[in-house]
Image (cartoon, rainbow, N blue to C red; front, side, top):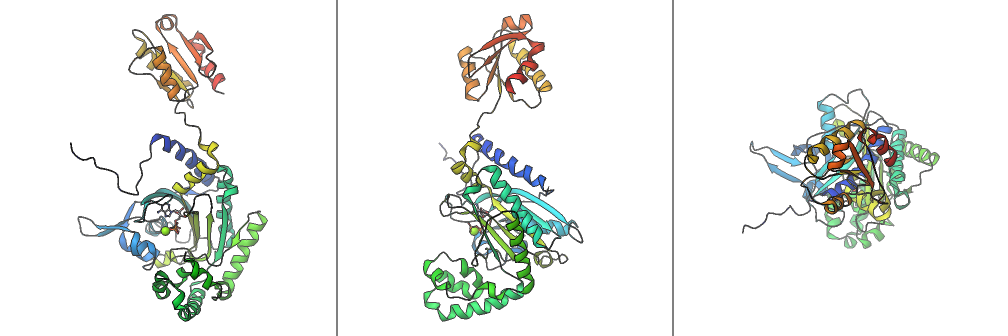
Amino acid sequence: MAKNIQAIRGMNDYLPADTIVWQRIESTLKRILTNYGISEIRTPIVEHTPLFQRAIGEVTDVVEKEMYSFQDRGDESLTLRPEGTAGCVRAGIERGLLYNQEQRLWYIGPMFRYERPQKGRYRQFHQLGAEIFGLSGPDIDAELIMMTARWWRELGIAEHVTLELNSIGSLQARANYREALVAFLEQHKEKLDEDCKRRMYTNPLRVLDSKDHGVQTLLNDAPELFDYLDEESKIHFDGLCAILDAAGIKYRINQRLVRGLDYYNRTVFEWVTTALGAQGTVCAGGRYDGLVEQLGGHNTPAVGFAMGLERMVLLVQEVNPDFVKETAVTDIYLASFGDGSQVAAMLLAEQIRDSLPGVRIMTNYGGGNFKKQLGRADKNGARIALILGEDEIANGTVTVKELATGEQQTLAQSGLSARLSELLG
Ligand code: ATP
Ligand code: MG
């Protein structure tokens, strides 16, 4: 027998038992996005490789070692998108959405990174993100954070996530700080691990979020980014904190929060949890005022974030399983017995779908005795079985059985929808 071909490591299949959970969570998230006047944008999953190199930065984990890049048949270098912002900005520039305009956009979809697969970290994963263009004040930064806080409340996980906040200032402020930081790190080279020694010259700010304990201790004596912030970035950050305070959103200022992608400036934030082990960041973002221009557009302020859906699903399942416990795929199961009953059942099901559009109804196929058909009703989570036998067909009636109690009643088909709406509420 031929060897079975398996899925690619780190790329998951989502089966019906999973997708029902995902849909539940996604529909809550999407409803809230529309509550804030944010519209969906869909961009391709593949883009020209230089887009990501330019947007994300050459000296980042993503571009250095995580991208799925390949030559296509026309010998162009293409990349499966590792994140959503670059494509969104590319589309915004190319389709004329950004110049002198305000845009409030969200996207959802698969992203690809060649990482070591583990719980909460995959090679194909999914992000839901928002990107707001054309607004430069701290008020919109605050509103995005307030919206994510509303997400957590509605998903019932608010008690299990905390907000980390920082400002990384302007490009100039960061350049000044970078110099001071490198000078400090050079004096303490022997205390740096290999990763940090390499990063020290290529992307020294990333040393700040090193996971190495020794490095973190050393950093207690390092110059602080805050002392190098430009005046406008300070005012922006104070403005943001004031709004979050007014809205009752708690945060922790984490001066070592710098984010892994190059394009950020001023506001950066992460929502983190301790409930998922090492993969603790569920949502991350910030301001990226320079990116549109860097990719060839006009100078356009922008702010956004991305949420990892796998981690969000894991978190909801972990801390609020009630939210996703509903696994029924139908409300009503239509059983039928005897000659001619199959087609009659199909037509009755169509009538019910016409009169009660919100109701889920499954028709039995492949025959089976009473016990077997009722077993299928149960397996699919139905609350009601409708029974159509020869007697019912002859009399124009149908038997309605409530599966929780076993109670049943035969009634005229003409009165069926009224009875069903009553039973299903
Ligand atoms: P991490 O530090 O965990 O690698 P990151 O800084 O690379 O995260 P971002 O690029 O900011 O992550 O992406 C935003 C969010 O997307 C993350 O907070 C996380 O929830 C999710 N995410 C990122 N990479 C993965 C992955 N490989 N698998 C699953 N989710 C991911
Ligand atoms: Mg990463």
